[in-house]
Image (cartoon, helix red, strand yellow):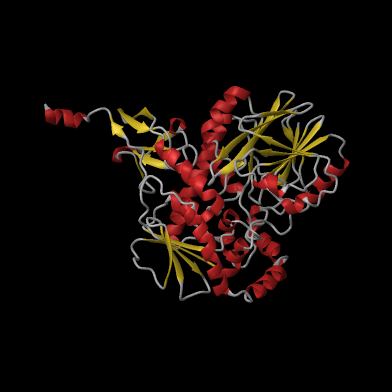
Length: 528
């Protein structure tokens, strides 16, 4: 088995009879309406993949893990003229990728359920999936001739890694996302000090999840992939050069692993698009001549951005021509569709959501979740309790005209967000980032999560605690979590529940209802 790194989360796995191309994000205009670009630049790998597809006589497969455009690059897929290959997809409730490929005319499209196996001539493919609206993703395991490659990409299946290894045996090569990919805190209004504090904590969380995953899997090689994008739009360019943010580069992860996981025999080199690892001999047999020195990051990104200067200037000029108030009025219909599909979960949401179009100063939409009402107001009524999203008209227009969807919109990062109090709310987050058609099922899944009352007993500091087994966020299995600073940590998104405070989450008002089963010694003495 040979594995060629294509850049970002892309790989080309080659066995004696098969070629499996994974998540080839190679288009020159990036993803999420040109908000994200590949780092390092991997556009030259497009010719490599095109050549493989055109000339190889082996059975060919293209695996797309999920709908996000840094994985599902339809523009690149359309450049492939010879489509004598099979596309492999996870069988998600919303078949977004499958529908986008309806007229693609490839050899075949195979949909696989969670843990379903697909047999090739000399290999097998198994997908592992999460299908939960806010998180719809899949991971892939390729096994051939006693060798295996587990590509987790963005799929946060950390609580299942132990059972995967037990069931499928040794993993030779492992890869998983190590960098952030969300709009918090990047798009929120924080002081520089608070922004860096939050970013540093999130970076630590991501690194620790990666380290623990490597400890469980114990691969020969871990490939740092699905790393940070480049932001080349002048509107976003500053993100690249922030002192601390949620987009660490591979060198920073490697430094962390060198200390944190030095007890392991795994290696974790920095890889570049075009590097080839031969699993048979456990070494890289080809290194790309195009390599990026992290010390030259500023000049590299600046030069990279200069290639797109005219593109963004032209687009900005066109954006000025958009009638912002018309977009504001058009937005109402979509918000009303979202509200109509909304089901209040577990408790009433008392925080109102305000939605402002940046160029429209005099009017704001207000969503009252308790009453399921949408009204137009002129200002915020209570500055101690509100959530605000502000976005430019041209970006919202692209959603309303079906050029991008709301999940893509969230990842453009061209929004400003404020929440007071500064607490995460799953329902509001889902309302903002999901299409109207997904809201109903999202609420149903949230309700199922709240209805799961299975409990378990854990020990901390010499005491036993009865707690809810499943995380109140997205149902992560807390039995696979760990205790850190008195908090039970969810292995999926690392939510922390304080056992000393009745299991209350340190980030919001959620709780796993921790009940201490052992009376404190001091209490016993006072009783006696």
